[in-house]
Amino acid sequence: MFDSDYLPYAVAVIIALPFLVFAKQFVNSFIRLKKQEINFLATQSNSEIKLQALERMTLFLERLKPANLVTKFDKNLQPHEFVFLTEKNINEEFDYNSSQQLYISRSSWQDIVTSKNNIIQLLRKTYEELNDNPGLDDFKTIFLMGYLNSEDYIADTIENLRKELNKII
Image 1 (cartoon, rainbow, N blue to C red):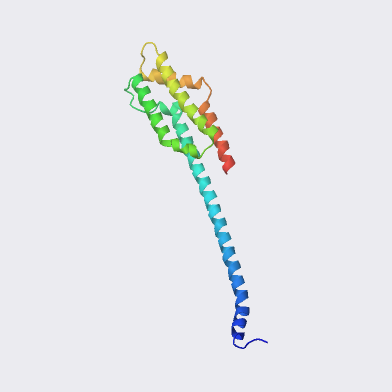
Image 2 (spheres, rainbow, N blue to C red):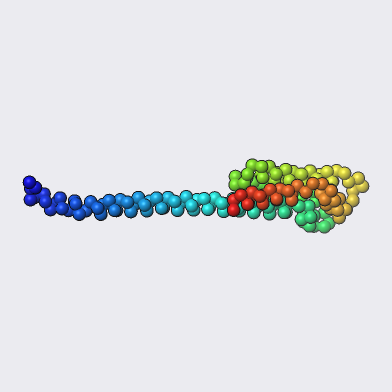
């Protein structure tokens, strides 16, 4: 019935077939696990990038607070020089961090832009409202009081970033 020439090959196939099936299942399982690992690492990496973006923008907002701005630069400046240098510093730091908008929500980014613009407006408005060209200390006091008497939009923006952070964690 069976030709004796093919019998060794048939036995080899019968013996090898379960090993080949096992090897195929092992390879497929290994590939599936590697894909899961890559997806996990990509997700984890993405979360870390978002966390770093939120940290950087929170630091920017902290630096944007008038209490921190008035401590910058030489005390011998004229108010118009202080306004120019402060505005330049704010815009440079904002430009440096502008790529972070890719990793945070659109509404949070808009809040950050609004906070930056409000501080710059307050700087200009304070300078324009000065009548008798006071010194820098008087300008800084008026600037701080102007912020304290308005809505604390920087703190609100930081709180919104905190809420966004809680969604990630």
